[in-house]
Image (cartoon, rainbow, N blue to C red):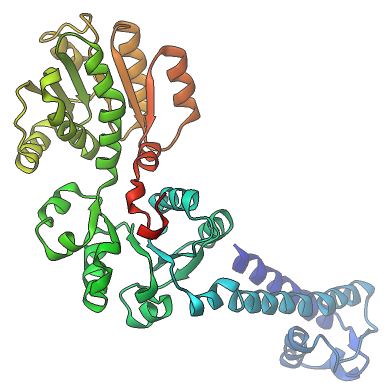
Length: 409
């Protein structure tokens, strides 16, 4: 946006100066300017951005509106040029750039997305003064300002696999290197290259992988063995099962009925975590548009062995028909069934949760949102629905053992 308004201002100021000369306004040090050709007038106007008319003299003669336009260009052009130069100097002299030269005992985070914000909150909660550098190949200016102002980090644009940047970031001095980028293959590739250059960093590298299937397929590689690898949905699922669902199962005398509506990455990790408490569960229903295929993938990857019965229903959680088929096989009005609405569509989760809670007030209903939602929290409190945020679960579940060893409380 800054580039756009500056270019617009430059064009308008140039048009004002050139228009004034075209209207016959002369210059005290260049009397011939009023009668000069178009190229000469264009050249004189362009010079206003550099020397502000000091070698041209002041506007003289011609119509008043023309002189006014030229005076506007006389003041505006050098001010605009000066603002651009000052901004460039401030960028070059930004303290964070100079701080790179004396970095030591610092943390480097590769990636600038939402997960980076979650990690920064955790780190800053324990490491107020520890230098933190965020590295990304491309980052919007607004996002850069947010990270630097909110968390006091240094933001660097570049590729962590380049040796020059590794030297500038002083990787051999870093306390922790955290890969939180969006591309799983590139993250593993970058970690592999860094380990090749700095093998001692292995235990200090944390690597996030979005795709659970890819992460599990890589678990026997040297990169995975040397680094700490994790998946954010897995962290969130662990927290939900251990902190919320397990206590619910233990409160009930009989074995529980569980419904997982939405069987993507999060739903599959919930199922994996339920294996640890399989003795508490009688039956699990899986609902998803692509439930059959996803269940096959889950069984292949997770080797599900629970003693409970698993029933797969293919369909949209918003369609009453899929719930009719479910209630043909289970009585939701009996005891306290646990219903987890965990699709990536927050509005469908919340709307279906309200419908189910009105129909089965005895059920314990969970509704997922991706980000923290005040609306979901308010609706949940009003209607006895457990609204939860994936991002908040992840933030609350980042282990303090991932802090640099010398800074753990």
